[in-house]
Length: 418
Image 1: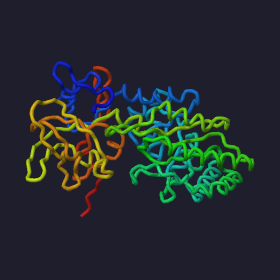
Image 2 (image 1 turned 120 degrees about the vertical axis):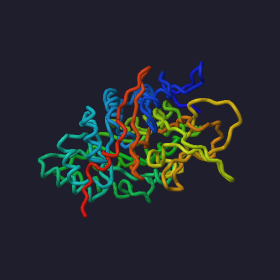
Image 3 (image 1 turned 90 degrees about the vertical axis):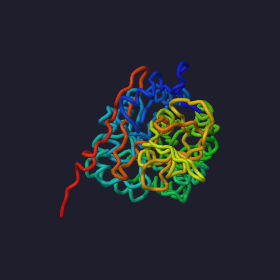
Image 4 (image 1 turned 30 degrees about the vertical axis):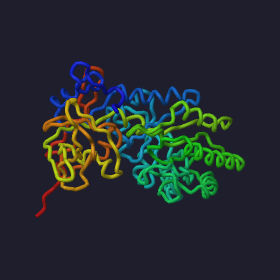
C-alpha cells in the first residue's frame, strides 16, 4: 500500500515521491533521511478546509506531530493556526512566519515563563487543564497587565478505542479537567480579573478512525455549553481537538465529509466558532523514512534486514508497537523472504518492522511509510547517533530543509569537568 504522491516508475519500477526518484535523494543526501511531499501536506490540509467549509473553522495544526520549520511555514501560508504544547513550539511557529493570534496553547504543565511568552505574543487562547493552572495564568496575566483568553480542556471520559499511550479522553488520563468539575471551574474563572472565559475544548486521543467517539464527546461538551449559558457564562468557541486517524495498515476511515457533516449537525444552533487541532492527518502519510540495508542476516528462527535507521530515528514501532508499511525502493523479482527490519542501536527493541515478506539484497533502499508524524519530532541521539536530515520534494525538485546532524553538534553544549 503506497501513500499519496508515492508511486513506481513505469519504466524502472523504482519508487518516486512526486516526480523525484528516492534513489536520487539517497545519492544526494545520504541515509537515513526523512522525505516529505509538499503536495501531500497541502492536499491533507485543504481536505479539512473543503469538508468543513460551511463551519468555517480555525484549523490549528498540532505542531507536536512535525515541527520542522518548512512544514510550519507551508501550513502558515495555507492559513493554518497552530496548536502548541510548549514555549519552544510557539517560538518555532513565529520563526516560521506563523500568526501568533491563531495559536492555542495546550499542555498540562505550562511553566510561568511559557505563559508569559505566550501572553507577550497575544496568542488566541490557553487551553487550561487544571485549577492550579487557571490560578497561575490569572496571576501572570494580571502581573503583565493583560487578560488571558482561556478555555478549559474537558475530559469527557470517552473511550476512543486507540492505543493507551495516545488515549487522552478517559478519566484515568492526565489530560483536562473532569466533566463534573467544569461548571465550578468556569464559574471561578468568570470571577477572575486576569482571564477571559472564551471557549471549551476536548481532545480524546490520536489515531481515531471511527465517528462515534467524536460525536459522544461533542454531545457531552455541548451539554456543558448549554448548562453554562443558563448560568450566564456564554462561550465563543468550541474546540473539538484532534482530527481523523490515517491509514497505516488498511484501516477503515470515516470520510472527511462524513466527519465534517456530523460535527456541523451537532453544533447547529449553538453559534460557536469551531476550532480543530489535526496533526497526524496533515503530515503522517505525507512523509517517509528512507533507509539503506547494511547487512542481511539469516537466522534459525528469524531473518534480519539490518538497516542504517534505528529506533532513535523512528521510535513509534518500539514505543507503540506501531505498524509502518515497508516498500523496497527498487522492486526486485524472485521469491520473498520474511524479514524483521532492525537497526544498529544496542537494544533488542530496536526494530522498525517485523515479519515482512520482501525480496531484498544488501545495499537496497527501503522506504518506511507514513513516517511524517511523530518521527523526527520524537527522534533522539541515543547511542550518540546523529539525527537524520530532512528533505521536501516539490514536483521535480528536492529541497534540503534540515541538515544532517554532525558529531560536533551533539557535543557543542557539553563541558568536560574532571
